Amino acid sequence: MNSLVREVGERLVLIVQKEAGFYGFDLRSFQEFFAAIYLVQEAKDTKQRFDRLTAIAPYEHWRNVALFAAGRIARNFSGEVIQLTEVWRSIDRKGVNRYLKPGAWLALQIAADGALSDEANLQYSAVDDGLKVLEAGLTWEQNAQLTTLTGRLTKEEKRKILCPVLEEKLRLLPESCLISGLSIYRKYFGANDFFINKLDTILEEPKKEALINSALNLAIKYKSYPTWIAKKLKNTLIILKQNLKISVLKILNILKSIKSRRIIK
Image (cartoon, rainbow, N blue to C red):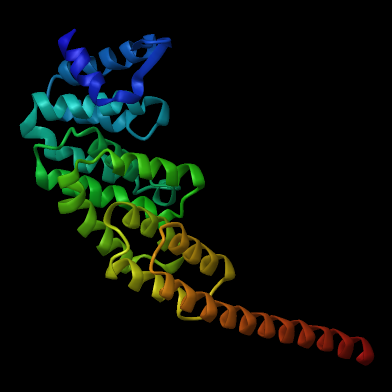
């Protein structure tokens, strides 16, 4: 029972309020917990243990079992824990997983659970691989999940791991994927020079209006420097006017081309 309380405590999402003032575990939580124990403890060797984990890890309905199993491996089989990296990396190598990144999400969930907190290098790898979800472009729900998971990292992990990893990602990501990463960065590390410079990169040249609006919304939401915001708003209006002028000219040219074709016919 102590083991159950400790391990489910790391997966606080599994604790539910049965009634006002009373909390407990659903039957499903017990099932997932004991399924993970069986898969990990009853494996005949390391290969079978990780074959089992690899088999269930890609599937969302097995995700809690996989996370329980990862935590148990980290505690009871510390000599094998480095092999967890291959589990989550292998998931994203095939088919649509290369774009949907379920393996990266798994890595981030393992990092958030704290299963690798005693293994600084592995925790770094988990966060590094986990933030590959930014490459896919995120929905509103996924952005919320990313905020929740990164928020569960310790203050020291945010400073020593999340900050440098996120800065490196933001240097390499295409501009269309920057907003989600910048939002996370600003939440934890403030509107520092790095943050402002990345927003400058988005706003300094003509780009898609939606991207410009997102960058400005991010700057205003987190109350960045007022003078800087005013300057960028002015520049953005100029850019949008230029884009509108170009769009109108393109439409006029298309209409002119259509009219010419009709005359020729």
